[in-house]
Every structure is written in structure tokens, then in C-alpha cells.
Length: 264
Image (cartoon, rainbow, N blue to C red; front, side):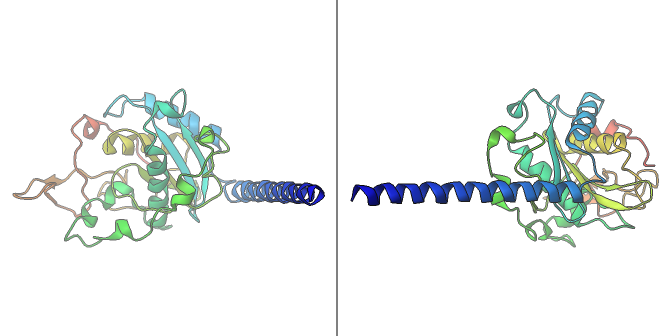
């Protein structure tokens, strides 16, 4: 009986070791795939440096630290970073939101037309032409909340190499275009007011030289996918009516006064 118990224990140990080896192998494969798919996009260190500089620049909003996520054209997360001293220095919930914004800007931009997440606000309100879009591609909660939490925002963040999914319809997500005009993916930023998120994402993208934007819906040829502040308050309407149909509410913290750099 004792020998049987020992054999069972040994078998259990071997199975556990095999499972751990398999998991390590899958993580290694995932990291390699992400490295291959994301080669043309900013590394973790490049994203973090640009995000920190953008957070320090004049952007309106609150004086808060930020999360930033970059995805490739397939929606696979390439890098996740934060600006604070540790992962608790910025809103924990904004990590997943930043990834969701990146996914959205990538999913609804094209080689010839960029849509920022800010551009989607009005159209996705009740009665809007895109109402319901925000429910169309759910977040993969298994990916979003996978641990270990200590790796969040690091080069080995558990999101790296997986698809997060999700659709977000307020400021902070921008498509990424290189100098040849190729659409490579997108960046998402979260942790401030949604208007400041947009400004910080814009400044980060500009610093990374991935803002060769072809066209957009903003009406500003120098800033095609910029946030649009054209909502006129209406009776009984929380956010009013957007003249162009692509408007975003003014968050009221000086964000709309920021003059963002023109795209390349």
C-alpha cells in the first residue's frame, strides 16, 4: 500500500512537472510570436519612455499617471507600460481600458482612414448610426485579468502576445501608421479624463514617429483623427448634438485648449 501511495505521489509530481514545462513552452512560443509580429512597433522601453514624456507635457486634465498599450494589426498586444513608480500609481482598472482602446482604434481604422476612439463617441450613442458597436467585440476577460499581477506593465505583462478584444468609445485610442503609410496597429492610453487620455495618446504617438495618418473624420487635415469638440447641448440630452456626427464631450479641464502637433 505504501509503495502504491509513493508511486501515485511520484506520478503526480511528474504530471505537474510536465504541465509546468508545457506552460513554460507555451509562454515561450507566445513571447516569440509577439516578438515577430510586433517587430515594427515600439518595444516596452520605447513605449514607456514616450508615455512618460507625454504625461509630463501639457495635456490638460488631472495630474495623474497613465497606462499605455500597443497592439499590432491583428489585435495582439505587443507592449504594456505605465508612467508611475509602480503598478498601483495609476488606476488599476485603466490597464484593461488602455488595451481595449488600442484594440478599438486598430479594429476600426483602415490603411486609408483613421478613426480614433474619440471619434466614435457620438455615433455609438442611442440613436446614433453605430449604436451597439461598443458591444460587438467583447474583452477576453481571461486575458485581461490573468496574473501574475506583479508583471502588469512590465516587459512580460501577461497581456503580451494575446488578443484582448473590446471596444471603447471615448478618447485615448489611436491608430499607428509608419513613414510608408502602412497601418501597423494602434496605441491605447488610459488613466486620466478621456480628453486628456486622447491628448497623451496623441503626444505619445507623435514621439514614436508613428503618426503618418492618411485621412480621418475630424475635418482638420493636419490632425485627421483628432478629437472633435462640436457637441451643442440639447434639451433632455446628456451630451447634446454633434454637428459633424463625430463629436466628443469637452471634459472641462483645459484639454480642448491644447494644440496638438500636426501629423507627419
